[in-house]
Length: 172
Image (cartoon, rainbow, N blue to C red; front, side):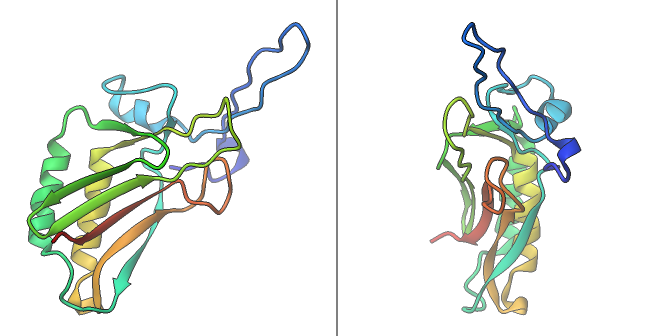
């Protein structure tokens, strides 16, 4: 999960140099990626966002224009089977997974005030699959929707600026 209180936030301080100056601190989420998956694909210099909560919303209008949830079900099955489960996205990086009418995407939107804080994000295919499955089945014509998005609740560096989003849409 993303830190919910200041007690959940870890700070990484560099040792003071000979001049007595300290490098800026870099807040990070708890390292749920390493806890869940060990070192298989783990990158210690990336911001761990495994298990991070997000808020879902459906793309309104154009009912019936969304992906076939059965196509998304097949795509999410492939994501669950990926090994290693962990992947890293650079700032602005976007991973796209498609199968027939189903498009699933995740984008890293981490913004920091600069070095030495990393803007690389680590996430896992199983979390993408779980979110995509939910969106595919719950953002359809019955909800007057055509796909949807799940946006991270808050940014690790900048509050109220989401670090990532996952979306499901109709692949043309």
